[in-house]
Image (spheres, rainbow, N blue to C red):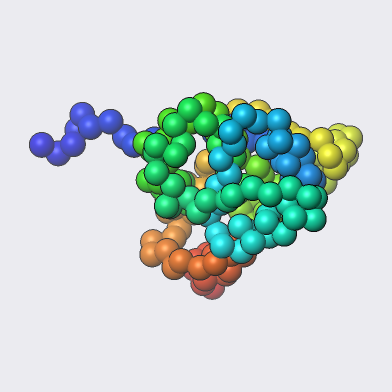
Length: 181
């Protein structure tokens, strides 16, 4: 009746690893992937998939990268899953990942990404550089993960009708900037 006692859908817990730059994210991300047993790489946008493939080729590595909405729960079960990027909307991530049961779920994040820039990423870059964080060092904390999720949830409230595109930058142009004007 009214879904009063229905459990709210949730995605599996995500370990966010944050670097200052996209270049540092890729380099350190590759190291983490190489250490993992049976890794599964997932991205949300086609341009990101192509970008990561090009990077892997330049490093002499080769990995299959799956598109998030098409990944089935059985593919994820008990595997080390690496999200090469977050989707800007929390609701979209939850809808796709709610039935996933990975051994571990790690998201690679850069302070240069549009989601973080929209919510003060440039200020964070200056702050962590003043604190002495080197380009190749990462940040990781539950407060950071919660802040990323909060930013996604704010976008959920702002974006009422999502237009699908091939890159995260284009996504922000057509889904966020049009609402800001």
